[in-house]
Image (tube, rainbow, N blue to C red; front, top):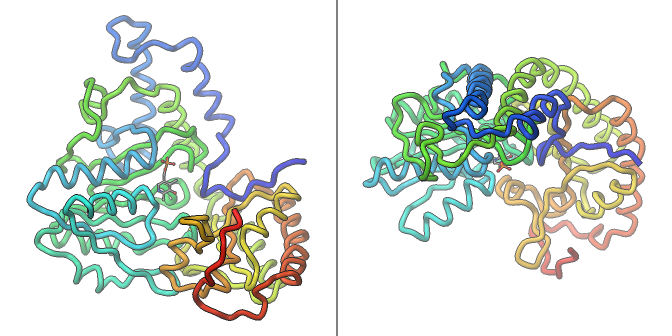
Amino acid sequence: MTTIYLDNNATTKIDPEVLDEMMPFLTDYYGNPSSMHNFGGQVSSHIAKARHRLASLLNAQPDEIIFTAGGTESDNTAIYSALEAQPGKKHLITTRVEHPAILNVCRHLEQRGYEVTYLNVDTKGQLDLDELRNAIRPDTALVTIMYANSETGVMFPMQEIAEIVKDRGVMMHTDAVQAVGKIEINLQEFPVDYLSLSGHKIHGPKGIGALYVRKGVSFRPHLRGGHQEHGRRAGTENTASIVGLGKAAELAQINMEIENTGVKHMRDVLEKGLLKSIPEAIINGDTESRLPNTTNISFKHVEGEAILLMMDGFGIAASSGSACTSGSLEPSHVLRAMGVPFTFAHGSIRFSLSRFNSDDEIKVVLKELPPIIKRLREISPYKDDDSVEAPTRPCSC
Ligand SMILES: *Cc1c(COP(=O)(O)O)cnc(C)c1O
């Protein structure tokens, strides 16, 4: 059975062209780019090329790009850098709907004497910019707000947010892992200090990412050791993956148009088709400001996990909006922050598409999913329950 892969916000397929460019650096060109001899030294020109390609995608300068081991490391590095550079400032601002790579760092910092303001979102998953304005204080070290939400695809008005924060003279980071490659980002006009991205979300390899640090902005390294990355990130370069990320960035630039036409069209056909054929289904998130590849749909009175399992039987791979945490099946922190009622939040499915999907795959989902929901509703123990809160019950996973 072939897989219909609709979980591209979790990770993406490596583009075959990316793999082709990587292979020589896993075989013949294994030299250390820092070596004096030409065998190693020749590799460094390929790292430079990758840095150029990534900078070009973001309209940044190559020396503003630091290669890291992924989005998580970039997020951690940005936060700790901002705090170390401003030791007197003990306050951070973020949102309730960030990726764990931000939220769990913030929680850790709270235990170590920092204060964190978590901005709320409304039922569409959008921020109240006045709440942001009012949260900024003289001791605010950093505002870190994601560009686009991985679960719902909701995009925040980042240009406006960055301008508000920079007008107040506060450092600004954005986790743009889900936005890079899908929408245009122009760092000449978008005044953030730090920006995180990840290779495996843009058809590049896993375990590689980058942190953009604007020229002139304070930076403190997270990893110390060798002089790699101009002393900003120690450790022998992951050459093959850096080359892969560079190629993925080049291809993202070339294919960005497709994300906003072909991919978006498939997403819309899927979404409209499901809403038409399945009663009591709702879209989660601001449909006016959303990534072109993502739809998060809730089906009332069914369990997301059950839907995923039954779709798996047809080779359809997506993800659900609930996770098994602390012994109970809880709706995700994003859907909870949006106040999605329990009866809906529990049956939420995220479909995230890519340029490797096809119209025929969408047709398969539109054919197979409605009967799955119908069948699950017939056997649902919650069908007469309209509660907003989760009932206490044991975890089934
Ligand atoms: C995937 C993701 C990350 C983590 O990136 P990794 O490269 O997997 O460490 C961080 N933030 C967001 C929004 C993501 O989607």
